[in-house]
Image (cartoon, rainbow, N blue to C red):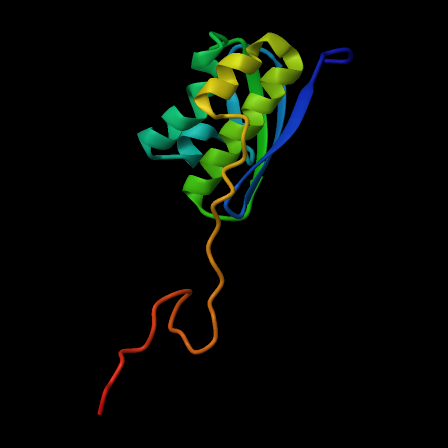
Length: 131
């Protein structure tokens, strides 16, 4: 492990941040010191995370060690996908058109809108009364 090559990147989604280290291996994914299938119990989220590897035909080629923080489980899965895609780009720049076409390289900037004063939520108003 002394001269092993490690590729790192950061991905974001909503309030979640994923810091990822990618290294040549057999496809083991560790999230916050746990197996990723144990951390992300929903199959749809597991599929989201594995998409960059499927698109680039690199399943079981790299081990992933990820540190996730902030947000919810769905946002963390999106952040992890974004950071894995960026790390794969560091490995091989020829993956760019494939990953870009699928939209894995762009940060999904949709975040929760702030609450405004006089309103119940960001846009929900109290009921109007004429009399």
